[in-house]
Length: 150
Image (cartoon, rainbow, N blue to C red; front, side, top):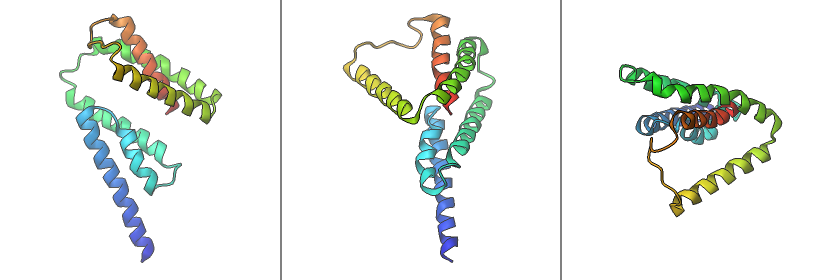
């Protein structure tokens, strides 16, 4: 009887995590993995969460793409997609070379530095104000790199 209650609680955590992550993705367009994993790590074995979270993120983005497919313009998105495709293998190689401590420290330093940069208001760029397609490709590569870690 107790096992059935625990299983029900675990299932509830998984479903609530998926619901909250879906809402977050629908509202912001991203954040599926962070939100879902935050709840799923409490209910599932640690080895199950990353593949489930990655699958959920892909499905969420495919649903979003299907929703806007008629108004989506592929030409402006091409540099991001090409850059992302180039960044993923680099991220995979870097993951095999870097230890968990190095990765954790790097991400922490980046997040702290970025937060300080934004809070101090050192430079505020508007979307599309600078850079052009080369900058878009660089952003795609920079986003593909951590995608390779996933």
